[in-house]
Length: 78
Image 1 (cartoon, rainbow, N blue to C red):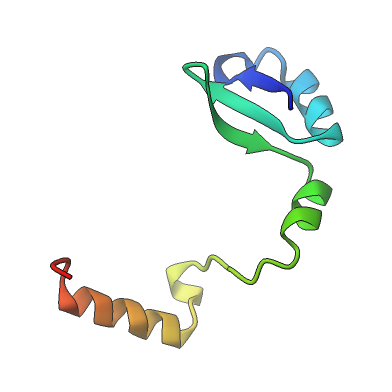
Image 2: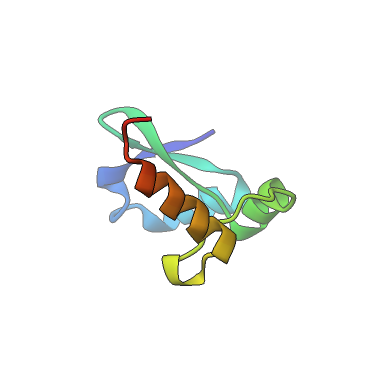
């Protein structure tokens, strides 16, 4: 997998996007992989069957909100 330092993204954006259209690429910070950039097609192929979802608080299902409220009511001492 190719990797690019985050500090070089601005100067090499075209190269990074071209590489990400072929395969996922690492974006590094302080010489450590921190992010992955990939095409939407690669993302959808990889995660299409993933049942996990992220919601904005205002859009969360009621049962999720209730679960979080119960957790908050118990406090962080669990």
